[in-house]
Length: 396
Image (cartoon, rainbow, N blue to C red; front, top):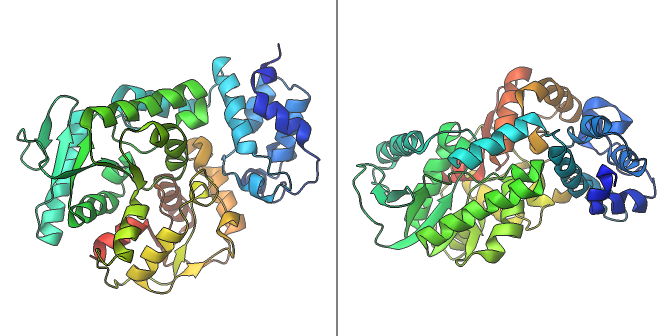
């Protein structure tokens, strides 16, 4: 059996492809490299001719898995899902994308993508709670759960939450890099009446198993479900992460014994009902909103909610695409946020966003924000990078 025979969906789309070429010039990977092999059509031709593992790796490791091809394809062929299967085959054959494999290993061992042990996560959360007190004057209701006991985040004293419990899955980068987002999660959930629980065992929204292989993806999904059952919250709240939300809604939410929502959905519902008051805040102009790929083209779209919340916080903002489903990738997905792919990302942004003026770039996804900050620094773009929750924290 050939390796590609173990990737049934990839084989199906390879033979279904009519070679209409609609997918070529809209593909971020092609825009960045200019190579036909790095287009959806080029990748499918490699599958059709049963290319060697080395050839498959060179092409499929550069797919951002943004699903833009699926939107522009007349048949809706999703080469991101084909890429997922081919990477599964390559990983089984001992040829994983090394950066992705490292991130997955961090998650499986430590419960977060950056490999921080629970003690460090607790210290970071405690520091951010102190900052909320300084900025807002209210003591946050945040509890840390280590799998056996609950601790009040500020004092470290053993204490269980007493009210309506929201189990929060943030991004680890929102704890260590984009800290205002984490402060926003906790403060806003408290405003809505929730006691927030942060698991020290599973402290990340991202599921890089999606980029590596099905076994790893399901194993990480299982870690979420195990933690949900241990905590037994009233609700699960998912933070700003595009691909993580896409996988969570497919593998975790349907099996969860408790309702699960995206933070934007919860905040939008509260704002629409008048339960969340949002005031205007100053932001560097122009404010540019960009849809993360898996919000606009993923399994459970998040399109209306962030726009309504953003408008309430900053007023007018700029849209780059008439249709959110046409949004361009940050070129950080699929593991392309790896340091060794930075030069490729810079070339891509120079080509795709040349002439766009940014004062505040709003892209509510942990990977997107991290990629934008690095690219903007490399290009000398003096702009703030933020998610929606960052801005709402300032506006409440």
